[in-house]
Image 1: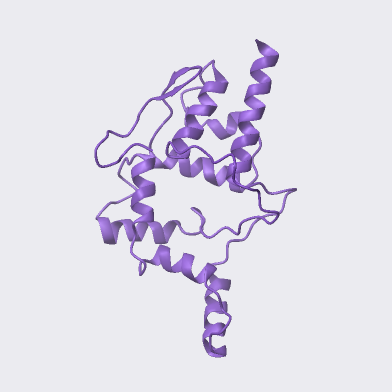
Image 2 (image 1 turned 90 degrees about the horizontal axis):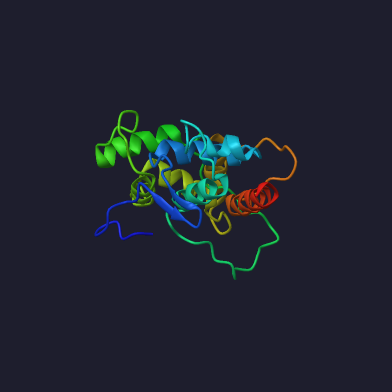
Length: 196
């Protein structure tokens, strides 16, 4: 990732296939993430938020550029061992939207319904919300360890968890975003070899 304090945030992404200009506004990446969470497999649908005026001819480069933007320029670590269990989702842009919106307005005076905000800036601001913000409290309640807490506190947290639970519609095997990203790049690479 570029140093957000000293470098301009990218609006163009360089790949081996050329330079691409995916939409950098936070809404595009949120839409992408929501589709992945719901199990969308159609590459063209997944890329549409980044290229609303039509997909570039070099679909592989367009996909790579979109993923680099989504990953905030960070490369995935290839030597990280895979866990046999799926990571539990701790937030959802659909379920937590009201909290995120209110927190941005409260802490940053940013109205997310009217502002254009680069995805990387949005991610940094989201991560930087204070621990007592509604969004961070939701993450805490979804992930805190209940062992050792008094029974009354366990019941209280269990009730909150039920209220803010992230439900997933089980349609086949769920993939993590990293697995979906790899699958998407593999598919694009295969298709580009077939056509050219």
